Length: 217
Image (cartoon, rainbow, N blue to C red; front, top):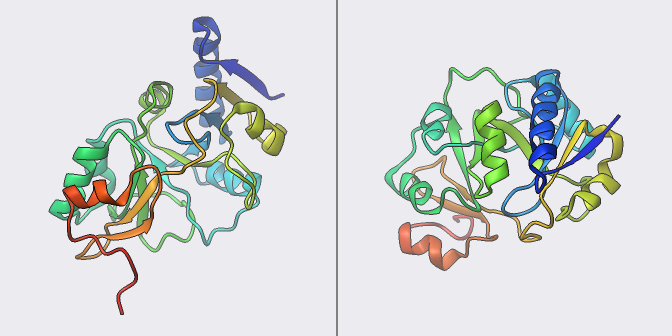
C-alpha cells in the first residue's frame, strides 16, 4: 500500500520520514519534494532499488540516475578530479538547482545505469529533501514522472503517473518547478553546459567564465 505524508504536519512528517527510511532500506521508492520538481528516489548504493526506479519511470540504463547529496562535503567522497571552476560552482550554487556531472571515485560500488564512471550530483535547496538525505545518505533521484511526460510539481501529479510503484510519497505542497536544474559537465579539462535550467548561464559565467556552451568542433 502506498502512503502519502504531509511534510507540513509535524506528526505526519515524522511518520513519513520513518516510513521512507524503511522503504529505502528494502529497495523501495520514495517521492520527495525538491527546489525544482518532485523527485523519485532510491538508495544510491542499492542496485535493486535503482533498477526499481528505472522500471517505475519506464527508463533504460542508457540515461544514468543522478544523485542528490545532503552536504557539499559529500562531493569529495563521490567525485574525483574536479577542477577549480567546478569547485567554485558548487561553492556558489549549492544548495541549489545546479547539477555537476563528475568523474566518480573509483572505489564506489554502485550501479546507477550505464554511467561510464561518471555521476551527476546535486545538493538541493529544500529543507525536507536535505533532512531526508541527512537521514539516509546519498539518494539516486530522477524526476517523479514517467519518461516522456512532464515533471511533477505536486505530489498529486507524481502519484497520477507513478501510482503504486512508489512506497512513500512526501508532500510539501507545490514545488517551484517546472524548470529543472542546470547541468554542467565537469568531467573534462573545460566545463561544458549540458542543459540551462533554473540557474541561468549568465550567473554561471560570473563564477566560471570558461564554460563551453556548445559542443566543440
